Length: 139
Image (tube, rainbow, N blue to C red; front, side, top):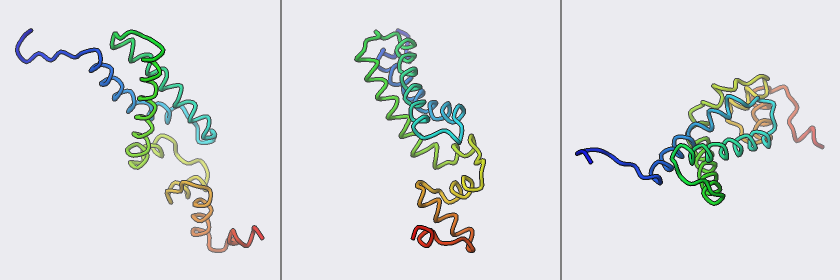
């Protein structure tokens, strides 16, 4: 073996491809999804992409494709892609860059960083002082 030559093992290749794939999955989901899709559909899309990514990683790395290796890689990919989405992709605003808000409510919620419906309602009440407070509407 030549001096300075780096040889990756199959396990090293799987880990490297998995890290790259887990960073790519949020981009693919954001490109494919629509703002009007329910969260369950977006979640299912991320699951399916993780499964496909796991299968492709096994093929590219030259590893044996078994049920156990596919399930383990799928779990790794899905967990890592969700962590990448939550801690890097969304805080940097890439989600809003790919999916611009289409309604005033979505724009206000995105601007306020709303994560729940109550936060959206609070954000709307702050931007529209003439609106009836939500507590008064519920009683």
